[in-house]
Each structure stands twice: as C-alpha cells, then as structure tokens.
Amino acid sequence: MTQTQPKPVPMTRRCPLAPPDEYAQLREETPVSEVALPDGNTGWLVTRFDDVTSVLVHPDVSAQRKFQTSVTSVTLSPDEYLASGFGVSFIGMDPPDHTHYRKLMTGMFTVKRLKSLVPRIEKIVDDQLDVLVAGGSPADLIPDFATPVPSLVICELLGMPYEDSKLFQERTHVIMSLERTKEGLLDAMTGMSDDMRALVHEKRAQPDGRLMSNLIEAVPDDGVPLTDDELVAIGNLMMIAGYETTANMIGLGALTLLHYREQWETLCRQPDLAERAVEEILRYLTVGPFCLPRTAKTDLELGGRHIRAGDPILLSTESANWDPAQFENPEAFDITRKPKRHVGFAFGAHQCLGQELARMEMRIAFAKLAQRLPDLRLAVPLEEIPMRTDMQIYGAHEVPVVW
Image (cartoon, rainbow, N blue to C red; front, top):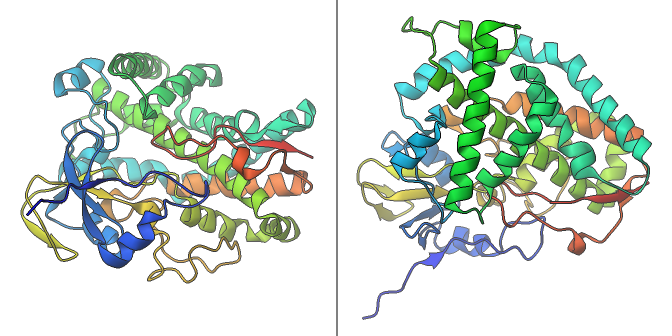
C-alpha cells in the first residue's frame, strides 16, 4: 500500500484578510496533521484552539529549536548562528532558563511603567498624523504611519536614536523574509548584532534611565548582572518583536477597517470602541500566523495522533483564532464583538511580554486616526493591495489611501 506523502503547510490565501481555506477542513477532520515543512523536515500542524493552547502549556513540549526554524527553508547551522553574535533569545528556552530571563523582563513591563508611556505614545501618533496630513492625499499608510509609530516607540523605550532604527528595520526585513538567502540572513544578523552591541556599550558608559540602561543595571535572582551577549540578544528580540509585529498590525488593521467600511464608520462614531477593535483585529488577522515551532521532548498523544520525541510541532495561531468552537461566527469582522481569549500573543509562559505595550500603541493609533481622518478610504480595491506573502510576519507592503 502506497503511503500518502504529507502535504505542505497551508500558505495560500483566497482572501488576503482571511487564513488559508484549508484550515477549516483541517480543524474539522484532522486537527493534528502531519505536514511537510519548508526546511525539509516532517512535523505536526495543530489547528484547533484548545489543542494549540494545550501544547503551549504542555510540560513535555519544548520551546528549544536548536537555532532552526520550521517555517522557512533557509536556516543557519549552530556554528553560523553563534558566529553572527545574534545571541540566544530566551523565547527559545525552557524553564528554568526561560523563567530566569522572563522574571527579569516582566519587571521592565509593569503597568506603572507602561502607563507612563501613554503621553509619549500619544505625542508620537499625533506628530506622525501631522506628517501624514502635511504630505497630502494620496498617501501610503505603511511608511507614513504604521512603520514610524512603533519604530519611534521602541526607540524611545530602548534609548536609541530614531535615525539608527532605519538600518535595524532594513535588517529585520531580511531576517523575517521567506525569500532570504543564507548570505543575506547572516549579513543582516551580524550587522544588527554589531549595532546592538554598540548601543549596549554606549549605555554602559552613559546610562539614560531607558530600558537598555535598566537591563544593564538590573540584578537577576542569581545576583549576576547580564553580560553584553545577553543584552544584545534581548535588544535584538525587542527590536524585532516590538517593531515588526506592531507595525504590521497597525497597517493590516487599518486596511481591514477601511475595507469593511461600516466597521470604520462605527469606530469613527464611537472612539471608545478602540479597545474592542484592537482585540478583534488581533483575533481576526493574527499577523504571526504560527507560534515559534515547538519540539516534543517525549512521545505523547495529541488530538488522537502519536507524536514522537523530537518531532517538530507547528501551532497555527491564525487557525486557532478562527476556530468556531472558541469564537461565534469567527469569519465575521466585528469590532463590537465582546472580547474573548485569543492566541494573537500566544499563551502560557511564553505569551508575548510586550502585548500590553502593543495593545496600547494600537488603541491610540486607531482612535486618533479615526478622529483625525474620518473620511479616510482605500485608494485601490483590496485585491490590488500587495500583501506580505513573502514574509514570516503577515501584513501589507502598501496601504494606499486618500481623504
């Protein structure tokens, strides 16, 4: 009997604002399915909400990936990765190592600290709207609004000049590309690491009370201050996670609101819906379509399938966030929807540390955009928008608008 070859991970979208159609059938028939991964391995794809959250807290599932990724075909060997100086991020660690760093970082994102950032974020958004309006209609929301807002915020947080962030943005683009070359990836990671190390040295010499300086001065539970290598790894993670995902959520969220015109008009009439709108955007769009790949530490059963120790496990957060078992009428985009737990920021011990900062940026950005430009509209039909199907973080390359 001929053995059926595993199919590749679903990637093609019929609608640019919806997950691939195959996920509905997978959730119904084979919620844990064997798939061929882009890096040449075979792994397991998990598509139901309850299964995804179960894996994210499973004690026999590891976040360690041995420097590899299962969503791109071009990867670095352990030696190449270490040579780049990029550092090992704590999001790819298990307890107790992960707990050590997570506890330290949690103290940097307290409610008090985040609330103190609100006036500055509001000023950044207002200033960028001034630039957008001054440039006149038509405009592109990606370079004129969605990209600079989180870039300015993360620079403010780290204590980095905004001009220096431009190169970080370019290198992040290469790192997150699905079409990268090994040479381009290594060059981008090495350059980003060198610049982040220079920032660490600068803050050691001239502390400024910002996040990087606070990390340098922090004393973890073991009493040993963070090394330059550890600070570089954390700084690189902050730049990618703090800029890339939020920028695409703002751009894609604005595109979705403007496409579903009645939702945009509702937000303009009721700006207090911004908080619910953000939660619906995070659920409906899920720009990070997969959690970072996991690995089974032991043999285990999941969704009726036998997972072998060492098998890669890919968790589809975008499928989980459209699971009708968790969300009523999930295919409807409704900013008045009562918020319910989603996995837009993952779940469990590895849930995104900066999620409240991202929510804050998005709430302020969408509320002020609707208040300032209520007649904003798309300049071209949705099907003409160039989407980021070539990137690990989904979004739009351009959002042309007029007003």
